[in-house]
Length: 117
Image (cartoon, rainbow, N blue to C red; front, side):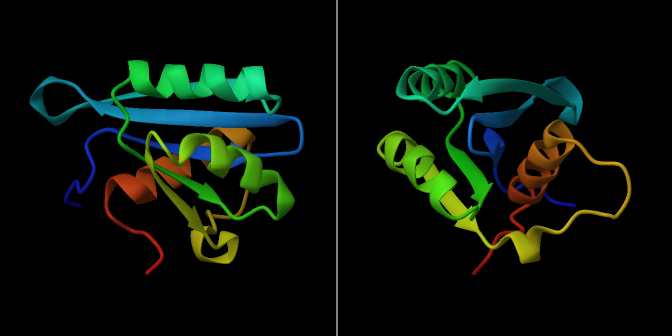
């Protein structure tokens, strides 16, 4: 599939944590995938923002998880193109899943331009 966004991230947002997965290009079309967890308190979200900037992230996507995503969105919207997408449209393949895999799946969909319209 064609790459639409070269420096992007997927966020899996919960009440107390945000798991972020960054995808950035390496040589010869390879992709660097790095994940980290952050607290949802202000200090943790500021750390998340700094980390995303250090990875040269430009776009990020997160599922619309009700009230939990609004604080994250409000803090990140000034520094990034933030997409809030319908969780039903981002369904992953059934089976074993983790927050890290969810964040990676969201980043992968965004990377290839598969976003809610």
